Length: 282
Image (tube, rainbow, N blue to C red):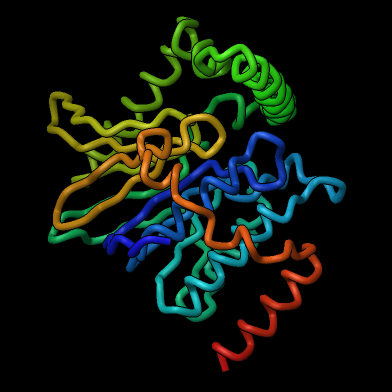
C-alpha cells in the first residue's frame, strides 16, 4: 500500500454491509489509502434490514475490523444512524474511546458549521409506509445482483459496464423530482438555521453544489454510496472534494498488500480483532 493521504474529515454513507450489492473490498482499499482525523459514518453502514446470518463475507468483516482499528489509533469516528441501521438509535449517546453514536452532528470546520445527518427523515415512504420502503430495498438489492450478472456478460463481450439502477433513477421523472426535493428541503432547513454546509446520504446520489433561496445560500453535499457510485466526501484545508473510486486508477491498479496472506474466517478475524482491541485500549 502506498503512502496514506492525510485528510481532516472523511464522510461515507450507505455502505450496506451484509448485502450482495456492497463493494466492501473497494471500500477497504479506499479506507486504507487515507488517514482521516475524523471519520463520519453517515448512516446505513450495516444493513440491519436485510441482514442474514447466511451472508456475511470476510471482506465485510475486514471493513468492520479496519474501522475499529482506526478508532484505536486515534481517529475520531461518529456513527450517524440511518434507516437501514435504525436499531442503533436505541444506543444514541453511546461513547467508547473516540467512537460515538449520534442521530445528527454539527462540526466546526475552519470557522464554518457543517450540519451532518443521514436524510431518511425527509423520506415520506419511511415516515408512513416503512414496509413499502423495506420492500423497495429488497427490490433494489435484486436489481444490483442482476446488474452484476449483466456486467459479467459485458466483461466477457469486451463492452462497457452498465449501471441499471443509476440509469433508471436518472431517467425516471419521479426519481429525479424526489432527489431535487430532497436537496431543496435539506438546504432550506440548513439555510434557516444559518449552517454553512449540509451533509447528507440516503439517496445514493453523490453531489456538491451551492443551493440558494430567498433567505440565503448553503453548500449542499451528499456522500453517495458504496453500492453503485463508490464515493466519499473529503474535507481538507478548507475545501470539500467528492472522491470517486471509479476515477482512482492508482488505487484500482494497486497490488493488494494482503494478497499473499492466508484468508481468515470471520471467526478468526473477530477473535484477532478482540485481542488487538483489548491490548490497545488497555
